[in-house]
Image (cartoon, rainbow, N blue to C red; front, side):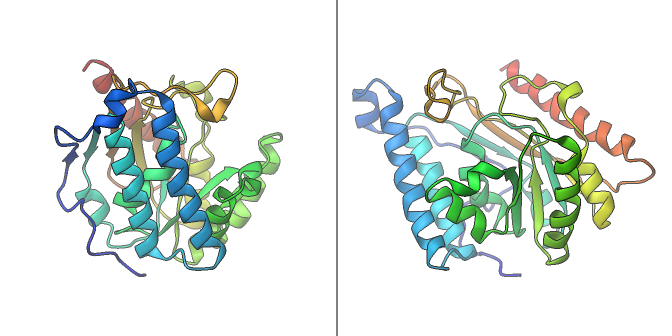
Length: 266
């Protein structure tokens, strides 16, 4: 696979330096307009490049890094942990299984995962029809599911997802049925573990806290931005799926829950 060597996340951890917030954002009182105008401009550029077949690894990392900078310029403080575990994969195909809080994660994970591991997503099928965003997802061979019939969704993931993994491209799966600030193990299904077992690859737990961007009440994807909510990502060790996968599923849940408990205390 094609690795990117000029990324800015070269250490095991990353913390947003002080003084990244822009004077304009301060002047605007941290309103959501500044964040979305920056964020959507990056999506437009990324989607346009994808439309013409030029969304390679280098461009993915570049645009995703621009999203991170935009977030920091709007008061976001980002904390990344255990990035060396991504390097240790050496490009190995895995299934990342994560909780899901906002659209922010899909825009910024390329910057620090993609230099080490090629990947795609399992997403809600309707997102493939969203202007610009759909171009990006299709360029990545994202697997779309309807989220109306769990049995049909599982069948689609185990068919199309395995094919993507056989291509040497890892998958990121958010097993929660929808974005949520609250993590409920009971609603965190085992579709990621089942995909990993079916393809014969490990699962890698990914925990995140991205409620810096809230879900909107009237317009779900245009929620408020809260600069008091810091942004966290952490990665666990690869887990081999054995037996019925229940042990691996519990390890993923325990990892995510422990990180969220730790971050919420700060």
